[in-house]
Amino acid sequence: MNLEYLQVKIRDDPLNPDLIQKEIEAFSSVRWMEKAYNDFLLQKSKDTWVELGGKNNKYFHSIIKDMNKVLRIADTKGRVCYAPKLIQTTFMDFYTFLLGFLDEVLKVSKNVVRLRRGCTTEDHLMLLAPVTNKEIKEVMFSIPNHKAADCPDGYTSASFKDSWDIMGGTMCAAIKDFFPARKDA
Image 1: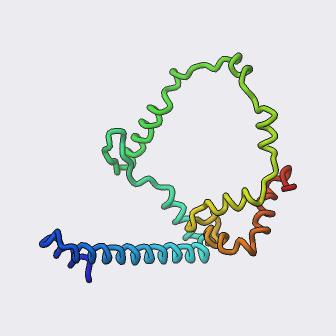
Image 2: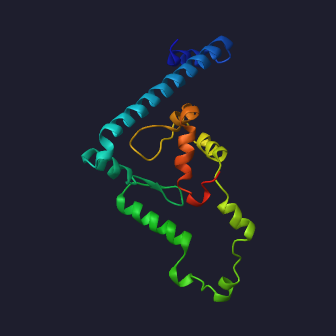
Image 3: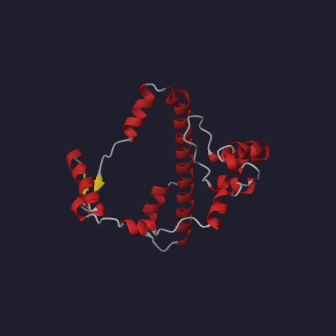
């Protein structure tokens, strides 16, 4: 049954358990279809990006330009600003309040800087410890499935997880290549 129709019926008979159950089922179906549609649109946008996006063309620049706009912002009192000048002022006011004014900056004592605690030997050894395949796999598998690397190939983290048995060793080797002093794990 149609969700809208069921909701109208429930308004007339709010304690009817049969209607309530049907509404729950219809709502679940609508949410599933909405998710499927959003997933489809996400994949379609990635296809367009793969085809056109990484080529430094007009499409690429229009996407980047749109990504770098702030169209509205709420000020500290919750009022939403839409005008570009108000947005700019709101940003400036917020960060001025957050960071303070130049004349309020405290001078850093050279004695405090000299007394700072550096890395202990244990900290240093931990930072230089080899990166293990297990650590790499744990990090890779902690990334949400719909996330993709910042590149135009469109592969999501789910792709890497699904092919881990085949590609895991290669992935680990590539990642370890970023840590030249740690390759022996």
